[in-house]
Length: 199
Image (cartoon, one colour):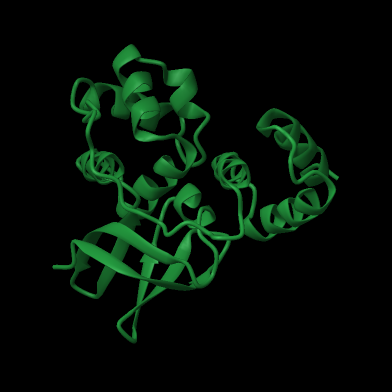
């Protein structure tokens, strides 16, 4: 079973599928949208991995930290939740937010996640209540920092990915902002990026 991978990002699409080159071998993984959006082609990425085995398929799912992996495994324990839906849930909410919504019984928040309707929100709330405590010192996988991109723009990229903008759209908006306002504060950049992406 593969539990962890470190390699260079060779492919990424808009639906959370990536390929990592690990020592000359390409591993295909499905990751939450925010994870896929944090890296550019050629970046070295480290991910925690869940190996999902069925009679007709072996599939790999990658996560940026142990909290995401634990939440994914907990979601798989809910009736009628498979790995693709579990990844989709984690694309729409982080583990801490998921745990909070479940423990508070916030069905309205859960139902805003793509793929989660009222009935599934109810099941999540009932079956996972008290089971998703996020470890405060959960180990985080690493993505090698881009030498040419300042921290403010890395934070902006992550924020836009969490808002589920497509990586290609984010790349284009950030490229324009790096030319127009390379030294602007994060809040200013976020407003301008959102304005560009809404055009």
